[in-house]
Structure formats: structure tokens, C-alpha cells
Amino acid sequence: MLSRTRTVVTSAFFGALAAVMAIAPLSFPFLLVPYLKFDLAEIPTMISFILLGPLPGVFTSLVYWIVLNFFGSFAPIGPFLKFLSVLSTIVGAWIGTAICRKMKSRLLTYVVAILALSAIVRVAVLTLANYFVIWVFMPDFLSYATFAVSLVTGIKLSPNFGGMLVVLLLTAVFNVLHVFLTVVPSFVLVIALIKRKIIKTWFPLS
Image (cartoon, rainbow, N blue to C red):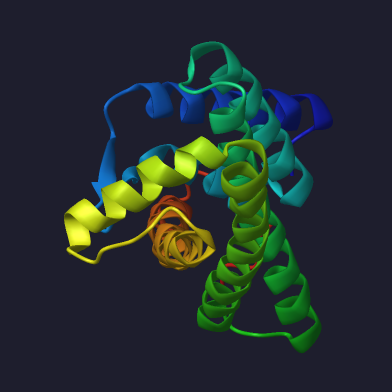
């Protein structure tokens, strides 16, 4: 196990790496909602969770959020929503890991549980957060959101409550897909490094 100081430093490194990746052109849009972008920068936060543990994973998310407030776009709302995205994914992974540990599950079960619970927690948190942002705090954004979705899908949406529900539903689909994009590559990379005895982890990768 890493010492507490090394754990903090490593967590901060992963958070800074995530922020740098977020600023770099490493994202690509979700076709159905073009202003939503799949962001490879979330992978370092999940790697931090797998390598170092739940609390370091949360700390990495905090570092990521802080840096994005200075260099990210649409601050402070954009970085805050990204923070909620990353944090909810980590929390879901934490819950899934805790359940599987009690059941003494195999690695595949861990991964499936983490995917499922991360997706559930993330969708719940982000749906609520986006509702307040779009419907309560920034109602003018609803016109842009419904127009963007209408333009891509060909479905005529009005900037009303019904239109917002469609936007939230498609955003939920985006978040589920993003969980897979974040979790699966993270496990593949960590397992490859473990097999080569390059690193060690608290996670039961067996």
C-alpha cells in the first residue's frame, strides 16, 4: 500500500492529468445531443479509484474540478456539472465494490456491478442537476438545447417541459454510455499494468 503522502500526491497527479486531458482536444460529441461530449479525461479519475481507493478517487475528482474552474469552459456551471458526473460515477463504483466484497464476487461481477451502479447513480444525480440548471436557473438554455436536438434528430421539440424531458432522457443515455467509456478502459489498463507487475492496487483484481 502507498503511504498517505504518496497517495495524496498520486491522487493530485491523476486529478491534474484529468484536467489537462479535459482541456486538450480529446473529446467528441454525442451525436443526438451535440453539446454533450464524451470526455476521455474521466478515465484518470476512475484509474485513481481502482489503484488507490474510494477516498483518493474523490480527492482526484476534487482536484479535477478545481483546475477546471480556472481553465475549463462555461465556469462555474460547466466544471460543477462535470464534477457531479465524475463524483457520482466514483460513488456508484464505491457502492458496487462494497456489495461485491460482501458477496466475495469474481472480477467480472465487480466490473458489471460497478458499471450498473455507476450508471444508476450518475443518471440520477445528473438528471436532477440538469433539471435545475435547465428549468430553474437557466431557462433560456432550454431553447438552445431543444433546437440542437431537433436539428440533429429531425424531431420537432418545443422549449417547454415536454421538450426538456426529451433532452433529459437523451442526456441520461449519454451518461450511461459515458460510464462504459470511463470504466471499461480504466480496468483494461490497470489489469494490464498489474499483470506486468508495474503497479499494485487495493482493488481485488483476481
